[in-house]
Image 1 (tube, rainbow, N blue to C red):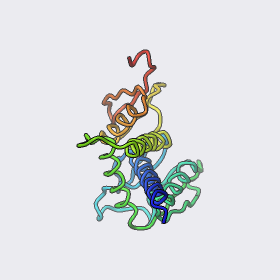
Image 2 (image 1 turned 60 degrees about the vertical axis):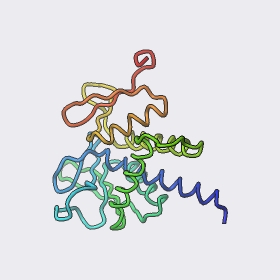
Image 3 (image 1 turned 120 degrees about the vertical axis):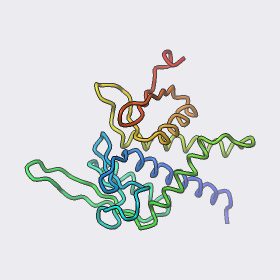
Image 4 (image 1 turned 180 degrees about the vertical axis):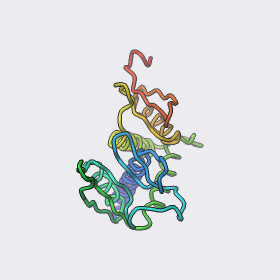
Length: 206
């Protein structure tokens, strides 16, 4: 067995799982039977909703109005070793629109919870000892994955602002730490409905 290659595959799968978790979290939880909606029109099931809460059809992890986001989530879950598929259907009466559902096996929500918790620790916790080059590279990959996730599903702020709205503080904190790791001049402020993240021009951020 190639131990190095096995380790790299494991790290790649953890990055994929973390990006999938960020993608789902960035839809923004807003109630309604464990469903969520983002400004960009994405919908997802809350990972932390009570088991008794009414849910959409069994196996549906998330819904999107854009095929690219649904395909990306299914791709990430498959890379992380889960079973996932995308199903498209048309809804509405006078105004018809397409919905893309991502189906996943029953253990996926708890799997994504664990992936999120580990990624959050790797990015935000203060290390108790110096990190190796490999650990630093893995953290950088997690940082890039976090921003890929939020840019895939989070809509722009209102009034033409270049910022992104993120529903919960924990996700915004991860993106702030990830931005610093990637040398992105990111600023965060609290607004109604969540956190507003702005990537500032270098001269302004200095």
